[in-house]
Length: 383
Ligand code: PMP
Image (cartoon, rainbow, N blue to C red):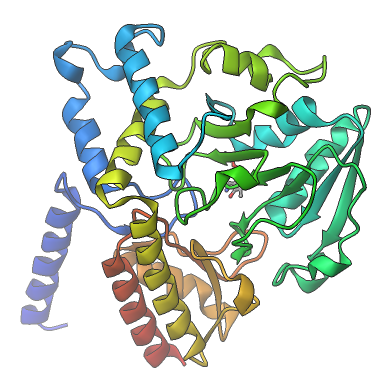
């Protein structure tokens, strides 16, 4: 390298170092979860961190039983009800333990005879395996499985072996790992339990069609540590005796989700995200953006011989877009080069490999444009 090239390289490295150490440096983060948050939300939290509402303490340092925290809890509940049009016949709970804990909690609260499960990918499979630990309470019946299709499609509902009087029908509308999305709830008679961890608040839903909706917060709702449960009040009061108090939906409902100390900071962050979402124009507005972002990326992938998405087009996720390169040996190079361009966390889930772009609400159109530009260049250099 000649002297001029060396000094130019030094200048650009210095520029990158200056950029990355600046307090407002942000990349496009395609992580499946914990996922990117709206910058405005992080800024608000940063601004309020030391001195929350002129109290001289942070929100993390106040009692969950204080009037101040009660106000946050109340606002979060109201904002969620407003965004999803949740009626008074539903109870909203703000719980801890992550979405995975709900795999057991659902069974402990609702299983008495038989429960139907639709197996469409890794997360519903995990829920089935976990629920099977409670066979002493009732039978876990898998109505259909997409495993033989490598979870690239949903088995035709005509083939599902539904039970006559199931306590509930369980499914995962958006399989985060496989990028498989069932936008409409299935036509079944049992109350529907839906793990919406990676799709709640990304698209309109009719809550009245569900018995229980739950979601871990760390994708579209807030940060890890909080799980939202929306449950029809008719399903309360049926928990099995083995259910711990902290996991009992009815007892949590009776205590405004404060049987014990809740994850207060995560709850506060969720309220900031909900306020942000309302400012964006609510679910319909964000849904329109989500469709535009996903369509653009799918169109690009489908138009290329170098990249491929194998999911049945009827069931493609708007939130998680897995794709493969023509040659898997290029995966590491792709991820490394993308990171250098400020496009982070594009590697697929370890169970399936390949790539995955998780494009939740907070990821803007610019991120998609930049990703496509990078993918175009990478293809040109490596095809
Ligand atoms: N369900 C789905 C659909 C998920 O995507 C995830 C996490 N990626 C989980 C459940 C598990 O969430 P947690 O780690 O909070 O238990």
